[in-house]
Length: 227
Image 1 (cartoon, one colour):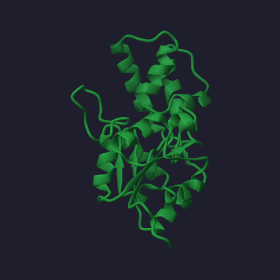
Image 2: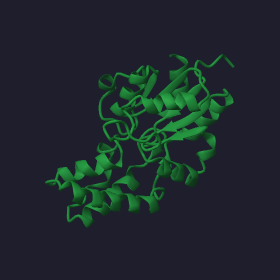
Image 3: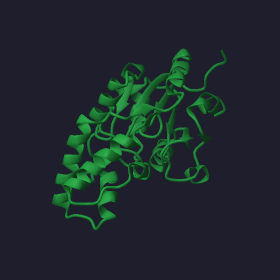
Image 4: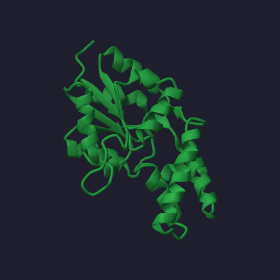
């Protein structure tokens, strides 16, 4: 087997490794009903994923007139409570996900997850799907605490990617994600990035401008080998 160019491969979760929009959309709708808003079509959740659950709910609420901050916080907490109990009902790995993880493992690549989903949720879902043991690290949107501005150090900030490189034991790292948050974080960390165009993308391949783009996880190994 030819030498593989990366020591570590880190993955975004929603829209990259896992198809999560049905459970996320159901949680958003649960909160919208509690707040007296109209529900949104479950499939429309694919347009809201990227910046994390809070941004998902805020976009859905703002589209219907918005809420004062204190009321929104209550609704957001209700959404998180519901999602904590219902986050792996419909969520499944994308096609070829497990085969790709096996192929990377065979190449002695260290793997991890970098998501804007809270770490507890990410670990819970990966455990429920029997995938948690495949990863050396899981970094969530809340894992690194908050920065000087009071916001969590999450993508598109570079810190989660840099932490992934550290937790992966150092060496050359590549990141795989489906959104501009992922590409911007990788760019800021000066790490090669592959765009998962089958996911919940918020731009075209040209707009995302990653180092490579794939239409299926089946294409990931060749894409990484070409970087």
